[in-house]
Structure formats: structure tokens, C-alpha cells
Image 1 (cartoon, helix red, strand yellow):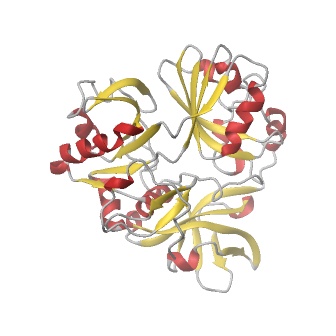
Image 2 (cartoon, one colour):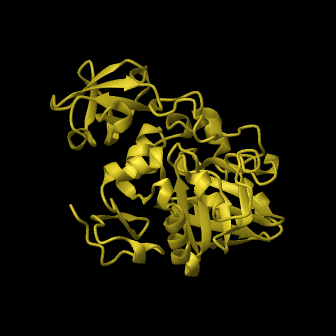
Image 3 (cartoon, helix red, strand yellow):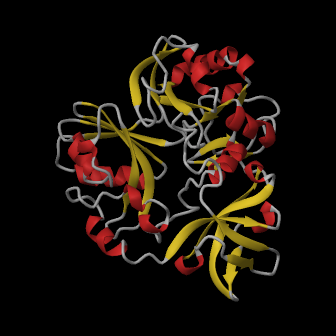
Length: 372
């Protein structure tokens, strides 16, 4: 069903959306298309060629001042003081009670400058509280930066055509950033990361140069099969990759240990928001996020309650047709820990189908493609 988009904001790249663009959804107050041409073509570009995806909608907080690093460390679950040069850290922000608020990335851009990117305004509020009375300014800057994510096996070759910077794996490894790269002559901050489980980069440029970037990347990548891709294809690849999203695989009733993020909680670092509660939660894991295959259509499976031996044990968070599984329905689900074992068979409420817990992720389980 098409949503009412009149009250939603346009994204920096929206003037370039084609006439074939499908219905839109609300992503953090922005109208974001579900597809530009069709999800199948866009999925193929992400997995086998190179795709352009917009991530301008995510919240971006710049912390500046002498206490910027200390304030970020007081909220973020990873130890930013241990990061190597130009490294990006992926972690979580939790409530004081140890429940999930956000999964975020953080990077130390320079002396007295930290950038955190996430999907929940509560992260910004936590940073403001932690920074009260300290030498730090917390600014949400998404109105100033456009973000174009260039993803897929041809992404490196495409960007290398547009910059003198060495984009090789040795010179620009996974989960590092360069704050001063020129892409097509446009000053850019480039992160080597993504939300697709493919080789990829996120290119941040001033919003006033967003369309210039879009045009340059599309023009340079025609022989590489470049294709703009939207939300539907992105959801397919992220479910195949087992990548979590707020309000789907977690909410404020989940702990990091229950949504595949326990590895990103550094309980050895100095105190940070929720650390004490997390110490207790780590030994009390009641639910798990798992991948399941289903013998029914994705629209039937979406949100369905899952049963084991007749008792409800969880629910499907998102279901998609999975090209990695030959078009079979694949979903992420939140289930009670005893039902999370691989091979467990589950029923769907109403007897509309069956589900089987499978290994996460189903695509590139060893994560070799993103590091290539």
C-alpha cells in the first residue's frame, strides 16, 4: 500500500529518481522508494555488478571539542580509544537498563572530533546527556551531508575511475575511512563498509554536490553494469546477510546478547551507559535472532507468530524472496533461545506454513566478499 508522502522530506538524490520509481516508505522522516526499476534487477546489481543506494536518511552526530572522545566513549559500547588510525567501530547504544536503543558506527575523525551514525534520535539524546557540562558540542548533521553507498563486486573498479586515491584492499581495507578523498573532483568522506555483505563504500559529500556525484558515478559505471537500487532490494540482501535493524530484530525489550550484537559489547572498557546492567544480561539470554526458511510466500510469513510443539516461541521480523536460496522465502525471526538451534522446525500460527531455523547468514557465511 502506498503511503502518504506529502509530509515526508525528499532526499538529496531524489531529483534523479527515474519515472519508474515505485511506492515510497517512511525512513526517518524521508520518502524512500521501494524500487526504481524492479527489485530483481536491483538485487542482481548489488550481488553481481555495482549498485548505488542512498543512506542520507541516517542520523549523523558530530561531536567536537576537547571532551568529544570521552563523551562518545561514555555512550558507545566499543572502546574508541583502542581504535587504530582511520578505523570504524560498529557497536551499540543501550539504555541505562542495558536494552537496545541503536546499532551505530563510530569513527574518530581527528583530535576532538568523533562522528557517530545511527538510526535512533535517542542516541543523540544520550550523547547530549553525557556531554552536559563538558567541553563538547553535539550536532546532528544529516542536513549537510548526502550519502551514496556504492556496493557490489565492481564498486572498487568504479570508484577508482573517479579518484587518484588508491582504493585497493591493501591501501583501503574493510572498516576504515578516508575523510579527505576526492571523488569526481568532489571533496568526500569515504567509508569502506555497507549494509549488503558485498564489497562496498559509503561516499559522503556536501548536499549541494549530491546530484553531481550521482551523475558522475552513473556515467563512469555504465560498462560495469551500474544500477540504482532502492529499499526492497536492500532488504533482500540484508536479510540474506543476517544484518539487524531497529524495530525489526531489536527494540527496547532486547539486549545486545539477544540480537546478535553481544560481540560488540566491550565490558572491559571503562564505564559506559548501561554497562552494569549488561553484565547481568549477558548470562540471561532469553531470545535469539535467527534465520529461517519458510514454505509460504513472504507476505504470508511477514510478522507471523512462530510455534514450537504448539506453543508460541517468537515471530518473523522480515521475510523476503531469497535469490541466494533459489527464490525460496527467507526470514529473520526473534525466537525463544531453546528454539534457536539450527534445524529446529517451527510452525506458523494459523497453520499457513512451516519454518526451519538455518545458519546465519545464508549469503557468504565467512564474510569473504566484503573483505576482498
